[in-house]
Image: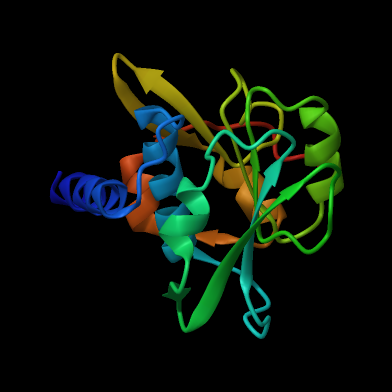
Length: 175
């Protein structure tokens, strides 16, 4: 339970520390903080890249919050960057697909076989092959993890993060 409190404190601290855009809801400020913190608890097979790129598919619900949150930040000594993309790309380390994005399945297909942490917020996102899915529990933002999808992408998710998530088991065959 202390791990849950630690992650909650990290998220709250990050949300409070980020400049607040008037048009960005509390939900997306929290999700931006989670995305930043997820990077800290995932190991990628290639650590020699010059940056960790967080891609947002389609319409950006974060406004400037995510960019402001990660500006000048480093994880494991590597700087973070974010970009909004309009089609699947191979250079994304993290891919967030908002519920307003068209073609979420196309983004997931584009990331298949790549070491890309896929995060989404549509119902059944992790059952469709995504790795981390956001959901709401009352007013709280929670997340579920599909560890099989992460393993297929050769990503290692920390046991600390797994303890905080609802685990969703799916068939281990390639999608």
